[in-house]
Image (cartoon, rainbow, N blue to C red):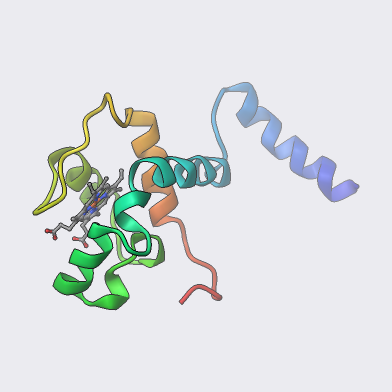
Length: 113
Ligand code: HEC
């Protein structure tokens, strides 16, 4: 109860400003990833397949990577790379790209491989 109200107090000022906590941003990014990237970058996708060939199986799934940098992600998404087509601001608005980047670069827990 007390912890919950403390949490609320720490989140409220951010919400009032229309800002999001890093966890909220990452959660939104996970959804956007599922819609815009998942068909190629989850199990069985062409992106996963090609990255496994180019970088090795341990780097083939973007959601498991711990080495992705925000600027690299942004550049790849907006310009494309190899067999990946560029993704425009119409398909993926800036705010969604920011959320996807937050999601893919968020620290992974110790349980993550
Ligand atoms: C139509 C399929 C497709 C979609 C949709 C797609 N990708 Fe890709 N992506 C690829 C392919 C294929 C590659 C490998 C390109 C190559 O190496 O030739 C790739 C490579 C990448 C890489 C390079 C990884 C590295 O280590 O070099 C990043 C980063 C990436 N994609 C991010 C994304 C993100 C973020 C999204 C969603 C916003 C996305 N991709 C959507 C197909 C896709």
